[in-house]
Image (tube, rainbow, N blue to C red; front, side):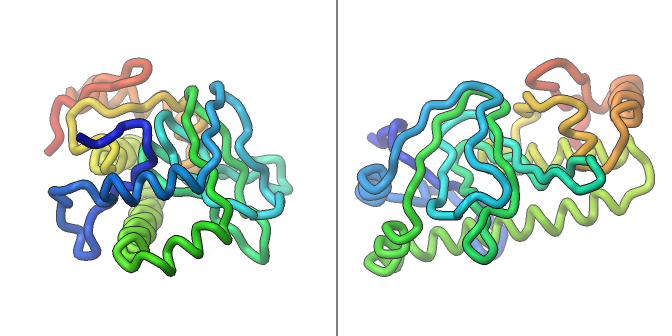
Length: 222
């Protein structure tokens, strides 16, 4: 039986097809756990900041993490949200390119980059699973570009909820874990807070999504 206390990564396959078995074996999960430092953080705790030396990669072991960047103008841009079994720690020239903060209490596995590199070189299947995960993250980035290109706020919000619904952590369920604030959602979708509130109300009034704190049920997935 799989040990839920060990790190896991989850993603669609390279073709985008559903994965019907765990991506990692128990032995691979144990090796990752042995290489990692386990971190238990409260909500709102900073994991790392934009510009910090990028010496580690992180696996989300439970909870929700927000990744964002504070712009020189004073505005904030949200790059994404990291759920259970997601990987994060994007770097450029040896420094992290975003700040990450716990939205809820989170369990994080911190793995030094040199150690992870060694593990991937020793295990081709583990390396392949990480590639699948990276491709999955690329799909999510492309999907975000399509979402923010829409002009109407209700459409952006509906596509955002559907994107979260399709993430491996939510398993396509019609009740989606959404603990982030409407300000967080607005900064991800490039919408003002008031536009997010009006868009959520519109989707509720027409019977598509019932917005309530934490886990809004989707009434009409189609």
